[in-house]
Length: 271
Image (tube, rainbow, N blue to C red; front, side):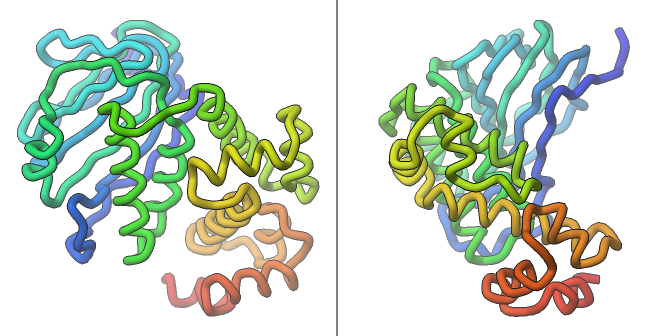
């Protein structure tokens, strides 16, 4: 078999080196989603952490011949072999890994390593979680823990889910990711593209993400700008334009208000 992999879509928040300062039941190590279009097999690993997989398409096979299908979920237990192989393409799934007081969590929720019906995957929660752990701070660390618990609750059937609303918020998040770099992208634009009213979008997003659609769009643009400041040599003006801001002046104003410093000073302090 070929070891090549064709990513139709890949988003991953890399493992945090140290999250011990988050005094929560659990802390988030990593989170992400894959949409795959070719053969792929995860490298084997073991770790003292808890991992949740939530299937969205295709079939994944885990050690012990456990097969995960669409709308099913699986916890890989601490110390268990972490390896998954896609055996039916195209495939898509979300995952998150947790550490901290995971033994207490396992007992509290009676978690085991069996595959179970979980319903439609809340992609918007996973996308929110990924954004929260990309540039971790104490505040965002606690937010990530809270979002991860929402995902676990929904997987285990403790949280109510409205399928139509879930799909709408998932589509909203995808639209933000696709069009955030355009200055024409605002809530009216996204509502029009989705064929719904601003009020409908507002109710769906605020009811599931603890923020308004505009707040989500603004935070997404800011996080993308932070990524570019840290990882590229692009000018502040080019970063502003590539993230959907009208120009450097407005971008600097928004950045200073949210981050407490200028983009230039933030870049210098990040290296």
